[in-house]
Image (cartoon, rainbow, N blue to C red; front, side, top):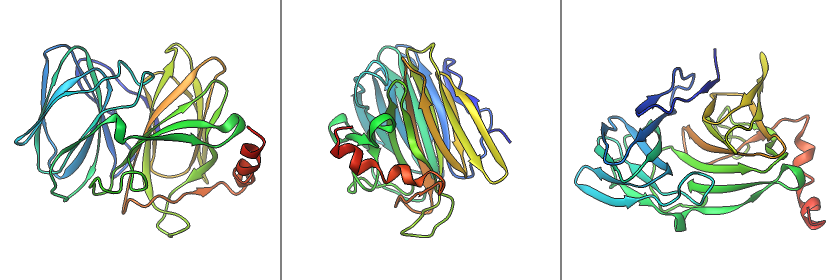
Length: 271
């Protein structure tokens, strides 16, 4: 089974070539100026994260004009549109437009809404050479008033030479408050785009490292995972999770968990 694949950026809707996840899915939408895409959410909720460009969204009887601002994922916080289940929607591009359509099963019938940059929480996780910057787009912790059935979505920027999602963690079973089951996907981009990073995904029966290139994806139905950027390059990933509930709880790899316990000390020392 493949857990890592390139993601096509052809005109129109690009679906994943395969997907080992049962709940979570992602499609990549590319539109030129004036082009229009129509879809239906069916029995799924969809979060449309504008990766770059601007567009007008129609969801059932609601219309959201001029959604988007950043040229690409490395130039600011995102705009996103939440599309509930049982909805017909359309997107019209104003200039070049690229969108990640993240989806998961849902029977939650609510009004669609826009998540603008001022509602995206930001901060730094980790310390020293495993510090990274994050955007929380749709999480229960930072946006509790925004309704969603099970999607959790955000962005992480891993600086040159740094590690991310470190210590490696997993979220395979519901055993709250210790651990919560979530499938996850990392959609990667690299700046400059000819650069690379590495990601390690491992479990009892497999331990594999993949070369992260611009527009690749790691699909994580289970297992520990971590990411590192090559020196001179910034690695971005859009992260999306779906599970039985929206409370997040992860378990670090026991062999590396001690690294996480050094964060308060390192921050106190200015690292």
